[in-house]
Length: 588
Image (cartoon, rainbow, N blue to C red):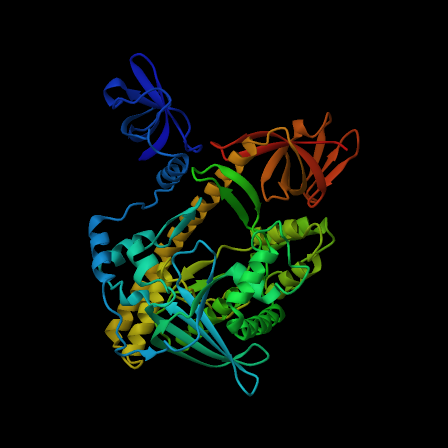
């Protein structure tokens, strides 16, 4: 086991204070294992002897991190804590370099290079694995084309690249960095759907009616050449920039100058983006009717300096262009999953079970304080029951808290070789097909699709059996990798949030009660940062906890606190090492 920490030197021995807050106690370092480390230097330590009741853990310094900047150190801390594969083995890089030099051929592929196709991503995205196009037919139906990078063409079964991708399972996004599933020669190079470059893709063409139903679909291997790379901000400016309410000169991407520039440069594509907007709206409306859970919980947008210092924390703003891509990817994933389900093909599905009766009962206790309740049979709750609550709280002060409560009630989605439907999306068939650069299940699905297309949908029984076994193995390993990556990403955000609040001690903020416990309140600030208010920081009185109603009541004042209450707090503690913040209530 390896950890990062701070070295503290004594005369004849030393010890390391771990950066990982989950590791209890210091690591003893004998003088022979110092490796010339100096007092207060950051070091990488290998544990040679675990701690016991009487003795501290022992270790040896294997690297002195004196020239590393803060963001790299934070990254290394997370890598070691979550055992993330970081550097690619030399043989994997060599294979990636060799493969990335292949020329694109039209053999056995449809030529879609003359189509008007766009990628729409964030400004900083480098691994572009999806592109889209929309056409309007005379009968009022739409042709939606979703083009996904054909990574399976480059990453062959049992290759060095494939073995490494299986180990990683997913790309991990932390701070302003990424630990990619595939080397950059592929992820940012030959697989990325870069503008003006011929690229291999697997295309799902769907004809969709005005009700949002897919009435016809086709899956093909093709070659595309993206017309133009667009950002979410650019597409949103095109679709909403003519509105006076949209212009905000304090925001770089909503300023009049930026909007006018985008409109001028993309005038020829206006109709195409209007079609995208209209189709996305149709698809979204159908999903709402089906009970799709649109949990509008704001992601945290953390702005870092060049050396990794947090400059700002705020809710990440999703726009109409985010909705467009989300709806198009959802329908493509559903279409592919259903297509191969009816073929009884070996496959990896994205599965999301309905919540348990116990969880629903617990949720209703919380919702009671807001005047809401999940309706329906306890043993057969429907997605619509959840979506109705989301509709009821839309735009209200408690929206974020209630959305979080619903999210915590839902089970964790996972990968399985058997289709069991997706509760959160209210879908009978669902898979992950649209991100093969960064997720292994998508890559496996592309491989299965290719085998069916290349064999004219006739596979041998031996191959089907082999693929079924692999689907089960990869579904399980990918679920484990995804859960670990999700924890690492969440912890990295908590680290930077706490570090940001270290700069704002004793400042006052408005917030909302996001949790009620028998030891205090959790309060979420409007910038998405959450902290604990312990009893001793709630005022000079004893508080009674009502578990049934999830409230705290002051013994003397009778003051009652419940979920969703607006409160004012002062920051009294914030620690990057523990990744936690503590507040005190300010009594009005």
